[in-house]
Each structure stands twice: as C-alpha cells, then as structure tokens.
Length: 456
Image (cartoon, rainbow, N blue to C red):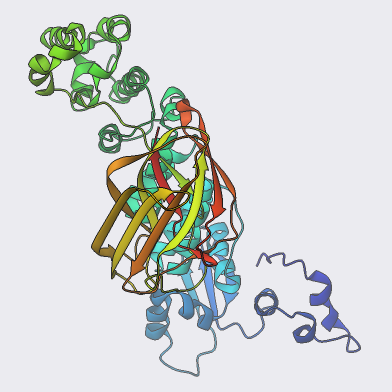
C-alpha cells in the first residue's frame, strides 16, 4: 500500500537495530504511532480491495468503527466469529486515492489536499460512511478555499448534499463577490433552479445590467446544450422565461435598458413599454405606474449588505454571558449602517436564549439603538445566530462607538478579547471598509460577538 509521509522516516526505521530506541519511544504523538502501525501493517485486521484495479489496503477495524457507524454495522455482520483474523472487503466503486484520504483522516484526524474535486469526493465519501468529523473537516476546507472560480461548483454541491453550513458560506461568498462572479461568466454551469434562487436575493452586490448580461450568456449556453439556435429570440425566450422576471430592469439606467436589453428582443413589446414608462416617469409620480411593473417584475432596489468576521469558527469553551452586560468599542473609516450582530451559539444543542443588545456612544451616556430579543433559538447547525435591529443603525466614520450585550439562558462559545484590532471588509464594487476594535473600559477578557452585518 502507498504509505503516508509522516516526516518520521528516520524514527520509523530505528527499530531495525536492537541497539536503537523502539518506535513507541521515538514517536511521541499518538497519530504518529498509529501511522507507524498502519504503514507497517502491524496487527491489521481488515483489508479492502479498492476500485477497478482491486488494489488491496490493510487497516484496523477499531479505528474505522470509532469514526463510522456504517463500518460498525458492516463489521458486525461479517465478523461474527472472533476466530476470523482477516477478511478482504471489496469496494469496487471507490477510488484508491480518495479512500486513502479517508483512512488518513481516520488515523490522524486530518488529511492534506488542496484539489477542490478531491475535497468534494472526500466529502461524498464522508457522507457515505456517516463520518461526521470528516464531513466537518471537508466543509471547513472547502469554505476556506472559496474563490470566484470554484464557488458555483461548491454551491451546487452544498445544495445537492444538503449541507447547511457549506450552503451558508457559499451564499455569503456569492453575495459579497457577485460583481466579479457575474461579470467573469462563472455562472454558465449552474442549473436554472439555483440560478433563480440567487437572482431572488435582495443583497446581490452587482449592477443589474451586468446581472442581465450574465443571465443572457447563461441562456445562450443552455440553448446550445439543447441543440437550439441562441440567435432565435423566441427560442431564447422559452429558455429564459422563468428567469427573466427575476431581473430587476427598473434598477437599470434608461440608457443601459435601451442599448443593451431591448436589442436582444427577449422581452415582449408590452413589457418593454411598461418598463420604459416607469423609467421616464418622475420619481414623485412613480407610485402611479409601479403596480403595472410589479405585476411581472420586482422593482425593489437590491440593498447590499456585508459581514465583518472577527472569528470564523467556534473556539474556546462555554461561558455564562448572562451575569452582566459586556462591552467592546469600534470605529470605521466610512459611514455605514449596522443591520445586525452575530453571536456564537450555545454549548447545549438547540438552546433557547435571551439576548440584549445596545449600541452607544463611546462614553456610554447615549444609547443609539437597543433591542431585547427573547426566546432566541440557538441551532446546533449554525455556529452563529443574528439579532437584527428594527432599523439599521447609522455609524459615522472615525467616531468611536460601544457595543454592549448580554446573553442569558445557557453558556455560549466565545473568543479571547485579544483578537484582531483591525479588519478590512471587502465590499466588492463599493470598495472597502476598515473596522478598528478597542477594549471598552467596562470589559472582561472574553467576547461573544463574532459578526457585524452592515450596509453602506
């Protein structure tokens, strides 16, 4: 079998001479010891014949059982007699390279690959064998690896495999990077259902004309897949008829609509006339013609929003934040409006919490916004939950503010207050916002606000 390189080759070879220290002494880490017994086939008690080539790899049942209820059931059915030392199980549908990643994780708690396709394959294998720790590891690595080039592929995997954490991460990435995503033509491989779901979002960070052009290019690609002529406007209309109503044409300039949309002959004449009528009506009288447009098109202006992450994943232990109000200070280099604050979930699964939030001036003498949200459900499937202000809170640039909060009910995760003192939020086409954080006068050593959601 192909061995995993542990960086311990010298130590592993030391047992060849009786005068050298045994491997149990040389290898101090338990993971290195397990790799040693695996690579040297010591006391292995199960073998797998993997893939079309039937390559055989030996390992230890106990570790597989510890990670997978599927293997526990499999071994329970096959090994009824303790006298049986070794049997070989055929896994013709697995790929040896991917299966070795799976085994590497079983033995060490980690595996190493930056290849997105392989990561997805490992995730599929983790789902197949119900290895929850491996699934979580794959989702973390895929989330960290998100780019404009691969986010649509990972987004569809998250949808197909019903992984809410990965789905949330990809949706947020799409929202924040929609301009680059849609203008680079990276949506061509997405299916119509997922495309529609994205287009319905009010917070896509992309100009509506760029959105239309990307959807039009997607439609041409779909026509070619169906052996149709993309220059046939009636055929294109049939392909796009479920998607076109999701484009918010009234968010475009009359010039863009006239020069880029109308010539493509996608819209029926009556719809074109209705949109033009809305665009050319003075702002104060648009409410009179708005109902006609809204019969077929959404006229809501997309409202961009962004998140600031102080910490991406759960760390630390449980702490009772319900004893007193906790505080920290921040300021920004641009005017923004804070929509909500994110909080780490409770240690106890699906706990119910009472959360109080205030935004005050630096001296804590004037309260700008305050909300007390009772019976908040902290779901185990979401590391962070949000408390939303009734109206966005205006934050003026270069002014120091205090955020004060209290979380009652159960102990929750937290981060050390000795964290990032500055975070730059990339807002796509709208530029960047720099957040600077400071400790408040009345503060402890732990913080529980990993996310700030804001709009420009």
